[in-house]
Image (cartoon, rainbow, N blue to C red):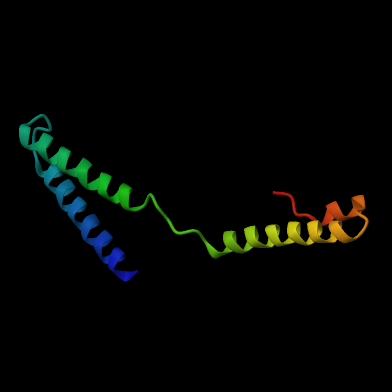
Amino acid sequence: MFKRQKDESKLNNEIDRVLGYMQDEDPPTSEKYDLLLTNAERLVALTDRDNVRKPMSWDALVTAGAGLLGILVIVAYEQKHAFTSKALGRVPKP
């Protein structure tokens, strides 16, 4: 958990270092500037790739579970008792 934050800070430090070199480069049309730009793009792509998959929040899991549980309760009640239209008002709408 904390290791990922350390890796991200190292990666951000490296991006800052490359950007600093790019600012020091006089003509932005030089080959060295192009090489630095390529390196910066690769580093930014690495940070984007790490942030693509995020864990699902507990709030979303609890909400989905509560919705499914409510539907199961209504279906179980419907099998044994008369089903009225008022029961559908208790189902949360997405």
